Length: 150
Image 1 (cartoon, one colour):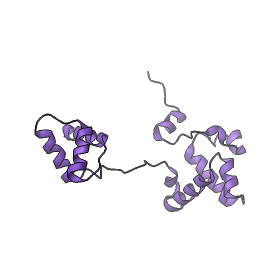
Image 2 (cartoon, one colour):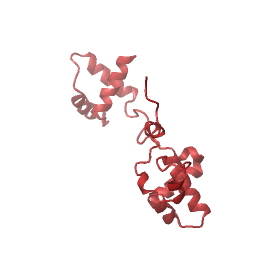
Image 3 (spheres, rainbow, N blue to C red):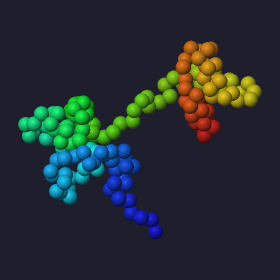
């Protein structure tokens, strides 16, 4: 029998667990079962609501909720643009292997077929020299692994 997943476990799994719940000093987070300082989306929303509706400065609101002033401004812009979903954490960096163009992939496959497979580090240097594109060796390893899965 498996142990039921707690809210904290689920927040962690979704990437919405507040890394510093102890910094939240708003009274209603201490005394209520409804407000959860571990829920990062709820904390950010309440920070924005408090800063916009209660007549306090943005710096005061951010401090009360354990956030920085730049975090307040980023959350404010994301909320204005996307609503509550804007407060969800987003994956950083590029979302795809944008440097691994069909030309680069063909080059990788050609090198892979011409004999023994090259190490990703050596292949990365070769791509840089031949095609003028800087590709991280780990990106090459992932691309080769994706090709094997197909």
